[in-house]
Image (cartoon, rainbow, N blue to C red; front, side, top):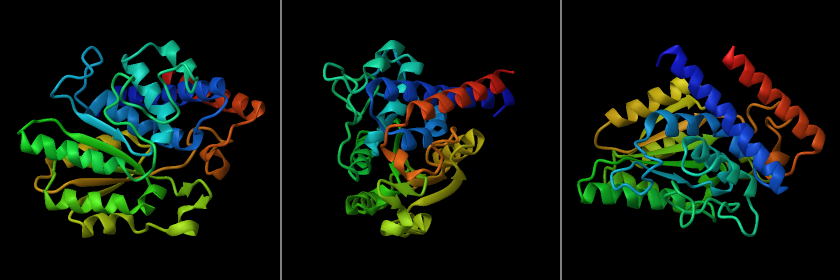
Length: 280
């Protein structure tokens, strides 16, 4: 990846954070921490990796994306709007009763969304179904699924992982947003899923561990996943909850808590500063 492409993806990640934060501020609620920790992952997926077309969101051979941690919808909605799937100004309607942009990601009314989400632990199963369908009907599309590390406490995740290993779904990539925090504390305090890579390996997966905020590492890992034949790949993305704003980083209360006006002000100022740095 050349330096200009790298900077472009980093700029998009900052824009994803800023637009999702503004939508959360306008809505009066939303999940800042997990939305911010996946910004670089979404930037690389939507603007470098996936075969998708905003002008034809339902095209048959598009790559599929499943946000299993569906409460982080603000970041995906921001990525979709930036990509051109729907107007940017619609982000201001997030969580409104009359809006199509609900608090958890939703597929029936949002262009570019392939799977709705609500209860944690279900997304990988849907992604396995999509990947298995592609294999069955000899289609070339790939399926990507982002899960939270706390979400790995759900047993259904491992049933899906076992199925993916059995059916040798090398067209499936699970990306674990390993930010170490969940609603009530650290994942280790509550019910540790560690070591995540060894667990996936035991179900027959290839695993790659990366810095989930390094766009070059993300792109390289996704490329390696494409080249790996015969087994699915799990990318363990080591991230920071609330990444990009000092007032949010590694703070459990920002799993779903609303920032204060002062915290919003600091966050927007820091995001603008980072944007100008990348444009300089």
